Length: 139
Image (cartoon, rainbow, N blue to C red; front, top):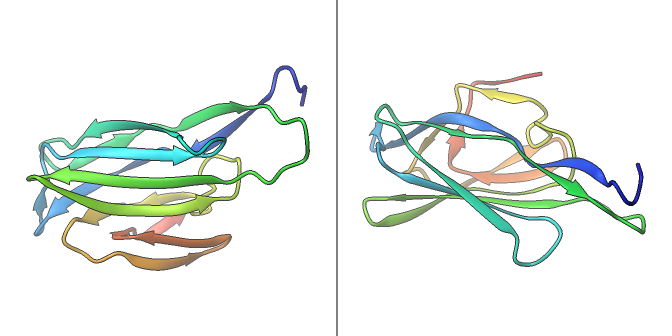
């Protein structure tokens, strides 16, 4: 890694899934993804939920330049705005620079019910707080 050129890191992996409210597609909901990894302000992006509740958040890669040894951590959050309410559905510290490092692979049948409570899910490198579920992880 050249200090001038930097290193490409994945600060938030792609997530594809379905958002529901009381079991029905949350069509038109706005998903806001936030990540802080190099400063307190961080950055965000958003997408809209489709007619069938489907959403797609693309991978978020950035260039990291470091002059001293440091531990990489990306603080991730996802919020959903629907029917005038804000729902917090994802919170974690991603301690790895690789894509799909959050869960150790790609979650299959990823879905989030907005009325579900947040729960702590133990993962290989920490804890994810989420109201989302998935059937399995594909490597």
